[in-house]
Length: 272
Image 1 (cartoon, helix red, strand yellow):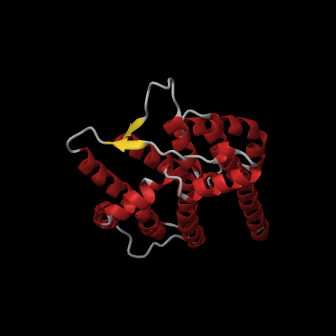
Image 2 (image 1 turned 180 degrees about the vertical axis):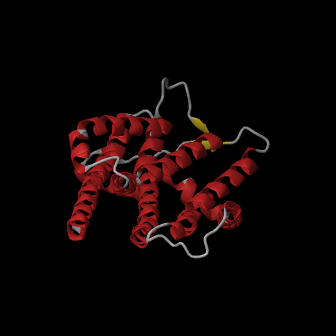
Image 3 (image 1 turned 60 degrees about the vertical axis):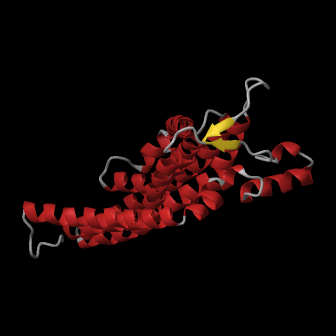
C-alpha cells in the first residue's frame, strides 16, 4: 500500500517540491559551470568535432568507403568555416552551450529527484517499477544523445554544410546556427528515445495494450517519420536514420506492454 505515515499537507508538498527543484537547478548550474570552465575541450573536442574529418564517424565512414572504392562516404572531408557576426555572439553562445551541457549531464539526477518527490506517494510495488524507471529513463536518454551525436549530426552537418544552390555561393556558417542545430538534434533524439518508457506507463494506466500497438503499427510508422522530419534537417537520409531506431524502440515497447499485461493478469488470477 502507499506510504501513509507522516502524511504531508498541501503546503508541505509544495515545500518538498521546492527543494527538489532547487537541488535539480543547482545540479544543472554546477555542471554548466564546469562546462563553462572547460570551454576549449567542450567546443573543440565535442561541439565542433563532428564537422571535422578526424571525427570518429567521419573517419570510420571514410575508411569503409575507401575500402569499397566509394569516395562519397568520406563526409566532412572539407569542413566549412564557422563565423561569428555579433559582438557578444561567442560569449552568449558559450553560456548557452554550457547550460545545455549542464542539462544533459544532470539529466539522470533530475530524473532521480523527480522519483524522490513522487516515490513516497506510490505503493510498494509501484515504487519498484519507479526505481527501475529512473535507470531506464536515464539510459535511454543518454543512448539517444549518443546516437544523435555519432550518427545523425555528422551526416546532417555534412549535408547542410556542403549543400549549394550555386558554385558562386560559399558556405560560411554562423556559429549560433551550427550550435542550435547540434543541440536541438541531440536533445530531441534523447527525448524521443524515451518511447519504451512512455509505452510502459501508458500500459500501466490502461491507455494502450499490445493489441492496440500492433494494430496501429503502420500508423505509428507514419508518426515516427513525421517526428523524424521535424527533429532532423530536411534530408531523407537523416529522417530514415532516426526512424529505424524509433521503430525498433516501438517494437520493444510492444513487448514491454505485453509483459505488463501478462503480469497483471497473473496477479489477478493469484488474487482470485
